[in-house]
Length: 155
Image 1 (spheres, rainbow, N blue to C red):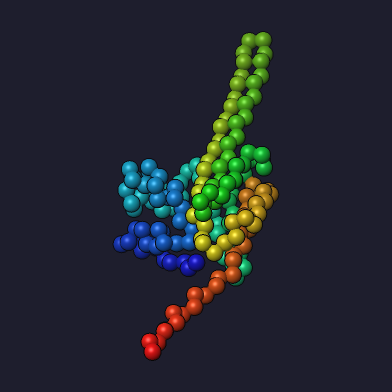
Image 2 (cartoon, one colour):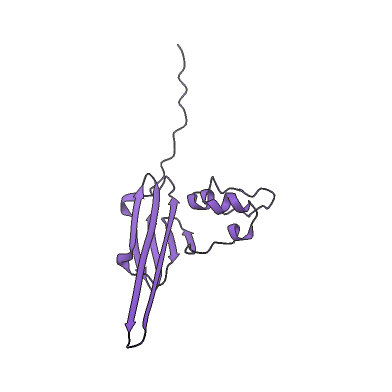
């Protein structure tokens, strides 16, 4: 995977061909309704967790900032080469007194999908949640170089 500087003249840049193509960034309704160069699209959107991807020789490390959730709130699936992470949390509180009732509630949810590169071991992906950070370790497979075509001579 390589990092490519964003070019305002080519708003898509290498977005589609990158190793981790974020489907929601491309197909989100806000993308189409607000225009290609809207700052809220390129600089992050409300309601989605921040994402870090680090690569080294043997693996990728993916981190999502998702404070306020617990391990049981998450649903993580791998389907057709996509890592799908979603979470949902509902809280409510009620206080009754003689002359009033106070009710408070909140609802938080998100979904994030990442297209995984072809050279990862999907069956060995590990997830960990600690201090509001959901992290994944995605091991790479050893890439087997294709052999050069053999030339067969005609006798």
